[in-house]
Length: 123
Image (cartoon, rainbow, N blue to C red; front, side, top):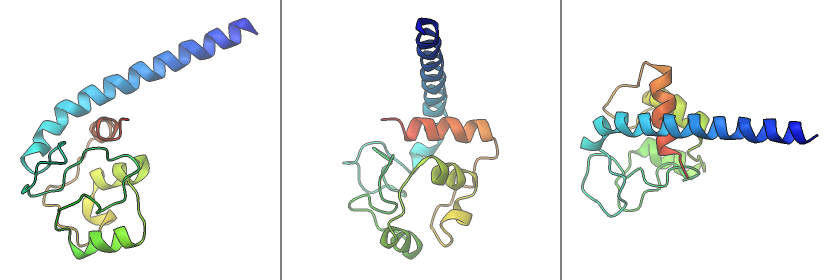
């Protein structure tokens, strides 16, 4: 029984280390997004909304940002940012929020999408 707990603890540490590594890679990849998005909720006037504390946040709810009608509709439906929705959005923004104003194309590389998602959805 002791071995089982030790093995589970080791697995948890491995998963945590992999998640941290993905988040670090995602932070580096996110630099390309910073021309439109900030991680500072107080930074206004950018082309895109701030992306601070994104995990579990209602889509289209960053205070002070003028969202497209498509994002306002998603907000009214109660959509939240989670791993699945963000991964799909990073792959093809217009397929998730048709009529959104995101001008950048999606990320083609699944590993890059996972890394950016891990960074943006970190606690």
